[in-house]
Length: 196
Image 1 (cartoon, rainbow, N blue to C red):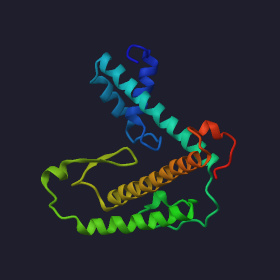
Image 2 (image 1 turned 180 degrees about the vertical axis):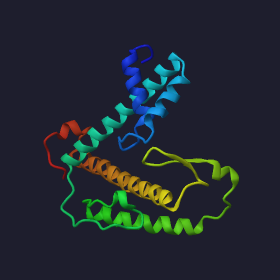
Image 3 (image 1 turned 90 degrees about the vertical axis):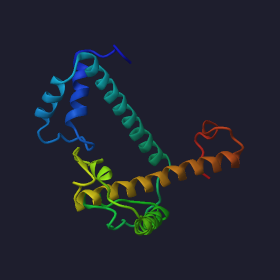
């Protein structure tokens, strides 16, 4: 991709990289953040960072498009709304529909996490306390600086990822089952058929 971006595209990508958090919201003080950052870069580094950010955004967008298509083609059966849990901090408390088995998986994940946390032994070393944690609002804090709310947020993110990974794995298991059942080598051969 090198050399293929004009200055406007590179600047727009850099702005997205430096000023927007993971939720697509502008970070407080973004103008100063961008100005300071851009002033420290040479043109080659600027283009390289812009290319990297654009590539990342395209991959994220492609994954969202794929996920929407997966959920549309293989929808979840109706399920009562899942209540809030300690692993779902406020920003995740919006009602969410899940397959009953995914709701069960969430409860099991919470139990596994709780048990594993009890079994963790070690020490909060200076090296660990200096390591950074990225939060959903775009801030980075160190392990030593992270608040109770920061840890709750990260816990919720990891729990949601675990459930999303189970959901994705289940779709691939469904595909393998249907391919095997119909003796097909790929899903294109089953186009238009209902998941068995």
